[in-house]
Image (cartoon, rainbow, N blue to C red; front, side, top):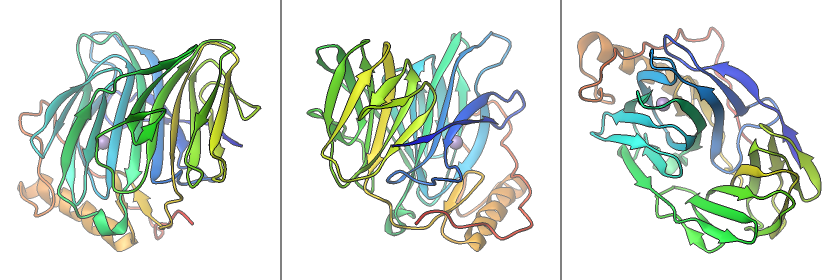
Length: 302
Ligand code: MN
């Protein structure tokens, strides 16, 4: 197992909140199609507007997976969805060819704690129409553990939400001292993100907020909880494609990102774009794009 440590990154918006980012980083860009892992909180959020305040912004070529442990987030998108993200319920937004959305922690939220994950869409599917799905997985329980499978299949539970490559995403909680041998697909590379407690993964220690990366090849993963532990288990077969990631876009070439940026800015200038539109009834102004880098954007991946 390779241990990836998080770095603190401020989220966009006026009152930036800080997230712990474990993907992408220098050593690793992807685990399966998982290409972005942001983990945040528990943050105490007061009623003066702190918390998650991310005004409308665009995405392309990806799916966003929102998973909360505590708190609630209000989601609005340009495909017409207005939803509340709640603990233990997955919200999967498919950006496809282009979407915009906003995310605000609700006024009732006093503690915000969760993860925002991105999935890269394979080249053949990245122009699909934007959409949004919601699923509340039934927990699977055993002696000293509980699992909520929000993407793919694990421990007899299957999530119905649509992905475009084989993937796994699950929350596992383990009582102190519990050992769970999780059957996994040997073609999958795996990531273990520790939210609470600490765990041994196939005997190797992994601390809170760290991401453990496990190569494909084994048909099981042994988790032993050193304390009461909560973790996310993600995985998928190696993605096999190089991607360009910049701001909120995933593309294949530098020029595509330049065009997406221009189309988003044109929407904000003129009110129209063939690719993007804004969510209806959003209370805040949409975010402008950051300046383009001077250098050519680097492709990540194999
Ligand atoms: Mn977003």
